[in-house]
Image 1 (cartoon, rainbow, N blue to C red):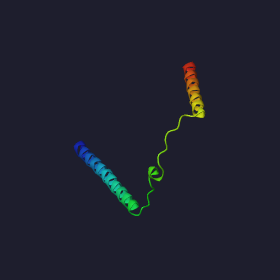
Image 2 (spheres, rainbow, N blue to C red):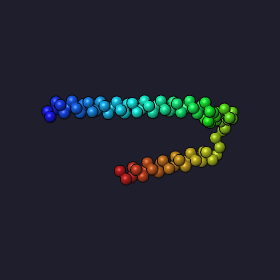
Image 3 (cartoon, rainbow, N blue to C red):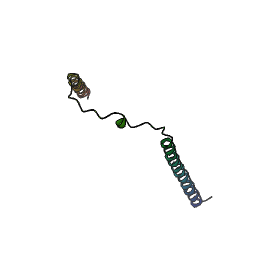
Image 4 (cartoon, rainbow, N blue to C red):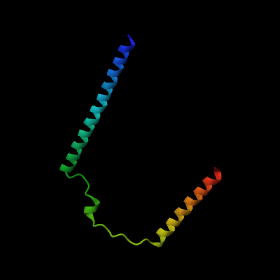
Length: 87
């Protein structure tokens, strides 16, 4: 078997493998679309959370949220400082 024959055979095998994978992906997408249609047809899907309850208005930030932000900032500052010392 010459190098040309081996390259031709390897190219054919590569194309065949790519076609198999591409075909499997197409079949997978079709099955997912079919499953979506079946779920919607039998009303098995969950309702959207926005449809169940009206959206709440954003509240003013509380004192605990400000304290949490301060703790996060302190932790980040400590990590950066520790990193600078270890470098």
